[in-house]
Each structure stands twice: as C-alpha cells, then as structure tokens.
Image (cartoon, helix red, strand yellow):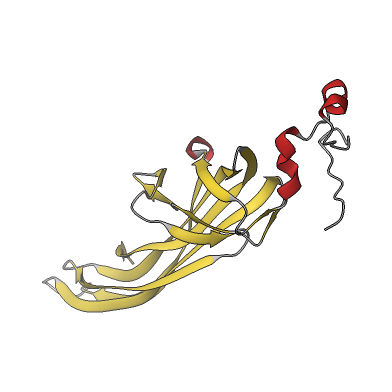
Length: 203
C-alpha cells in the first residue's frame, strides 16, 4: 500500500533496519509503528487511567425549574404549600485527545468519572462507548414533590432547581496490538445536571 515515513520526537526518521536504528536511536522496534494510526479493528484498548488527583470540579449555574413565594408577613400562623417539580436532566461526556500517537475513528468502552463527597471518582458500575472529541449525551427525567413554608411574620421564596456540575480529568490510554503498545493522552470532560433540589430564602 506504499511507504509511510514515521518520525520520532527528535524529528528522526524511524527505520526498520535494526542495525541502523541501534546506532542512531531511531529504530522502529518490532515494527510497531507500521500499523499506525490507531484504528478500529486493528488495535484494542488495554486500559484507561485517570489522574483523579488532578481533577477540576466546578459548580455551574443551576437551572431554575419552578419558583413559589409564600408571604406570611401579616399572618399570625405559618403558611405553606406543596408543589411538584419535574425537568429533564442533561449529561454530556467527552474524551478529548491532546497527545500521543494518531488515532482515527476508533470507539472504545470506558468508565466515566463522577463526583462523590466533593471528589472525582470512577463510576465502576457504568461502562459506556465513546469516540474521541464526540460528546456522549444522555437525558433523564427527574421529579419530586417539595414543601414550601413561610413562618408567621416572614416571606420566603422556594425555588426548585437542577444542580449543574462540571468535572475535568486528565487521562492516558494504552492501546495494544500483539506485543506493541502505544499511549494516547487527553482530558475527560463531563457537564451534567446532578440532582433536583429546593432552595429556600427569606425575602
């Protein structure tokens, strides 16, 4: 299918001639570069490693679902109501490749990262199919009944809102074909509506 010229980080052409490569530090060991770029059907994903210690967790502006104001400023008793809130929770996850060898059109299974107790953790119970730089989007309906009470002499505003989070985590992946392995690096980014909750403030 023709010749392919492959270079290392020093800009040196990689030779298949071991005698030439040993002396010049540019030998294509085990012909591992011949099947690059990494592509579907040729390479398999051996492992995905997340650098959870370098994760960035950011709370984003919540989405307001419903708002109720209870005014008991002139009432000798508490005033309360109950309401039902429902909304679609969005979840978007992306593996963005930023380094390593070239990869072309590959899909792979991986466990996503979530946030638990204010820390980034791997969701070991969930395995999803991804492609580099292609967002994986999921939606689900979240709903709940909420009670809104204004104490006597007070006025409150009750807001049902969808809490939105973002987590960004560096990752490396090891791809394998026979005895050959190559590494891809990048960043996993997830933006999602984590839960529906109520906030109550005095106004």
